[in-house]
Each structure stands twice: as structure tokens, then as C-alpha cells.
Image (cartoon, rainbow, N blue to C red; front, side):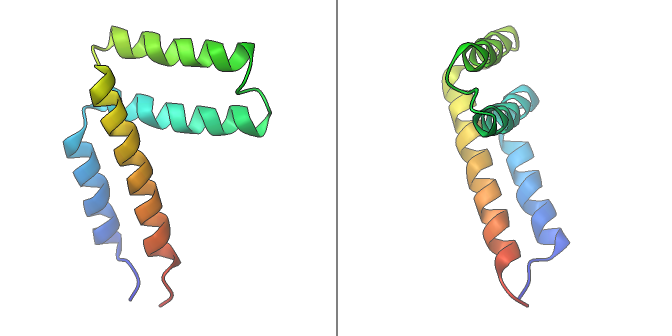
Amino acid sequence: MTVTSDEITALRADFKRSHRRPARALAELLLLGNAVLEDHELLEGELGNAFERFILESLSQQGVEAGEFAAAVLALGKLRATLAELQSIPD
């Protein structure tokens, strides 16, 4: 049984309902940014540190607490893993 677009939409909507917009956006930015920096071997070093500072400053400016952000990052990781697993199930 393949996953339907309605099921994917429901999973994404649940994530959206459960986490505030700035926490979601910054969680996604963190995961994507870290992946890009790591691909270019720049995560460890000056650029990686500057990116981390940007994320932390943005969280502070948006009033996102550390626990709220951590929950959004974990939920986004779980959402991505679940979607990848569902989409890999053969018809």
C-alpha cells in the first residue's frame, strides 16, 4: 500500500499545528544549513560557527525557547524519516 497525498498532507499539517512558525522555519533552516555546510566541509569552523550564531540570534529575536526549538527539530527529523519510509514502501 502506498502512502496517499492526503496522508502526507495530514502528517505535515500535524507538524505545522504542533510547532510555531518561527520554530518550524528555523528548525528546517538548521537541518538544511548543516547538511549544506557539511557537504562542503564547512560545518566545523568559522562559517559553521557564524551559522550557529545566526540561528541562536534568530531564535532569541523570535522569542523561541530552547526546549520549543529542540522539540521542533526532533519533530521535523521524525517527520522527514516517516515520509521517507512511507514513500519507500512498494505499491
